[in-house]
Length: 367
Image (cartoon, rainbow, N blue to C red; front, side, top):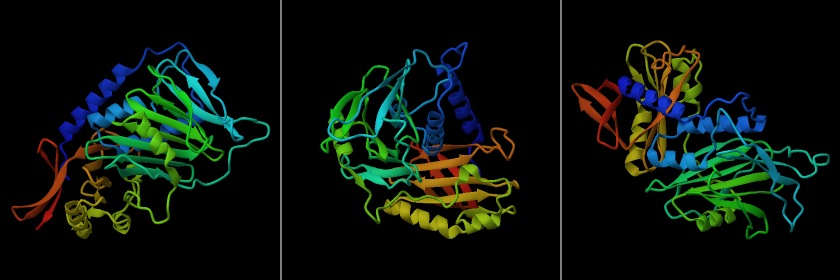
């Protein structure tokens, strides 16, 4: 595998410097975040690592998604209210900070109501702006975070979680949440600050719609269309193993069993049929994914290549590049426009192609 280490290192340094510039001065007494808020942050960081670095999506994330701050000032807490038409067991709690607000849900009567003990049943919007496709998803027993995109790069995020299990941080610096009523009678809250927000809850789940590139009315329409996901609905393809958390002793045999393309220590490549299947899907415009695990340096160096229907998201292991020990793995995700398999001097070479036409070699093997 031959990714451009110098280019990757420069990008990492620029990202680090930019992030440090955005931090406020450190206060005398640092703010302590709630356990629920920290859980939300951890999930967001997992999603961030899967997402490609691109300007439009980064802008959406800054305006709409959750983020963590080193210091917080001007903390106040207020209860926004309950549904007047139906008894609600949970109410929204808004913690207002200087640049963002943290939203969570708490029982109306803490002495009589406990958090629901249930596993999440997946819900989905049944109406989407034209051209929107489900491109990524975190789905487990407590959360469903689904991201949709269209060919123009507009993004929609639908978040569903078991009520009371997580909290959300949103940018409310220049806007306010406005209470309104959904078509089914549920009380909801909406806001427009470049991206469009709609938030609501029932006695089982809390929901959030974040929409970029469309109107607030469109976001409300998405929210009002949410229903239980029908049986047999498609989901974005995923590898059977999370490449960002592989153990140091992850063996070539296990990688083969997990359906990875494996580059052995001697340079031979196994499971090439997976590469052929991916290229066939890519040519047909179908979402597809494959993984590569390179053992030429002894320890596993994994890469994930995912085609979401619009572009390629390539997650690479940067443990060695960053100088981390093998048991402290690091990864990053990059965006490419295309890929191709080229024959060169007796070898087959798989190239990733950037938006500017630049080519990055991912792997090569004898023709």
